[in-house]
Length: 463
Ligand SMILES: Nc1ncnc2c1ncn2[C@@H]1O[C@H](COP(=O)(O)OP(=O)(O)O)[C@@H](O)[C@H]1O
Ligand SMILES: [Mg+2]
Image 1: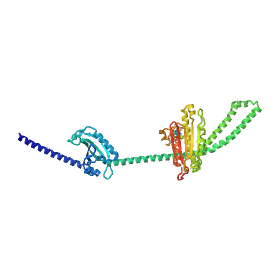
Image 2 (image 1 turned 135 degrees about the vertical axis):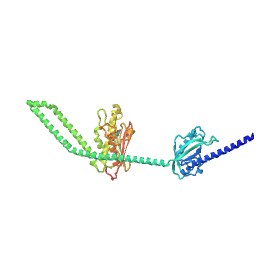
Image 3 (image 1 turned 60 degrees about the vertical axis):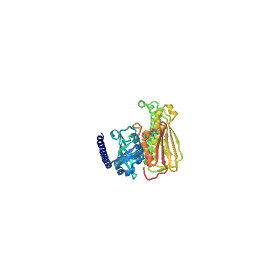
Image 4 (image 1 turned 180 degrees about the vertical axis):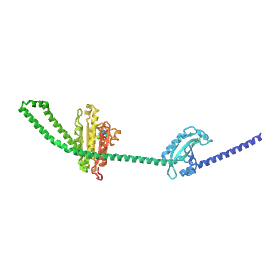
């Protein structure tokens, strides 16, 4: 019996030897292959401590292969990616595992993960991780860990970042260009509009003065003539048939009453045109192209004067109250015509907003909270003044507020709004006077436009 067993045992041991030889041979070949790979191949225990590394680790990151073993991968990562990696570990280790000999069943990281490592000289290296969770040893099934590869994608990342930077730069340049273009168009438009307005105002000035001055005589003469007609009627109460016919056909009684009314309204009309021409001249900057030290309260008052009509009570609506809280201000160096234009734009917007709001309210509601415009001025310090124009209208929603200074932005119906009032005001205050303009608004409570202007201008640019 024993002789039967012995050769068997010998054979058994021999097979075992051969197998071990083969195994260590293939393991050696495997190791050699892994060592020669360009990508990092690693294994770590479940805590993330490195248990295996190939030479690419040293090649890519510069750390010594042997010295790195035993250290947690964590230690080599950028702080922001440490948590990412920790989460991956937790995610992967949380599942039931299969034998490392059957890796297809082991838990695989669903996506490749980009991680930032520090190399030995402290620079960031972008590595792309692909990994799976495996059983590390067949002998001790409780030993689990991570097995994976890390590919150096730094060059690709850098190229991507350069591309992104280039795209961002192009975007910024484009935006700047567009802004410059809008401003150029705007300035051009306003200056040619200003010239046009000034020209028209100038051309209108003479004929309207002519009409205005002659209307006084026309009135005088017609009064005289009518007096004469009345005298004739008294002295000759029985005119001829021909005269009677004419009196009838021209309706003399009506004519006498109406002629007076007509002349009156012509006078009111020409006065209005004269005022408009005057304001056009003031507001087109040609009249005052120079910087002057002025009392800006006068400018505000003149704007209010021009808007007088719109502040009056109308049909069902009470007047818009204007509350002035003027502080003690020194003379302000500015382009006065331009600043007046700003006051005018803001005040007329407030009037528009208040009127529109009233249309949505009952008379009772309007009387309980009558329309108000409060104008407040103050000296901020020795260099700056502040002018605030506030209304208790509907206010401005955040979405609209973002755009109110954009050229051509308007919420008013076609023909009523140009959308230029505030963009021009912005240009005048910020660009031409180095000041600031901001809008503060609570929806339902009203809107406030706050302007700050330096008391003295540094005269290096003209408007
Ligand atoms: N006081 C205000 N209350 C509410 N909305 C305002 C006020 N001032 C300006 N806005 C809003 O800002 C927009 C732009 O104003 P603006 O540039 O003067 O152009 P426009 O008056 O021609 O519409 C207005 O259409 C309006 O929606
Ligand atoms: Mg406006």
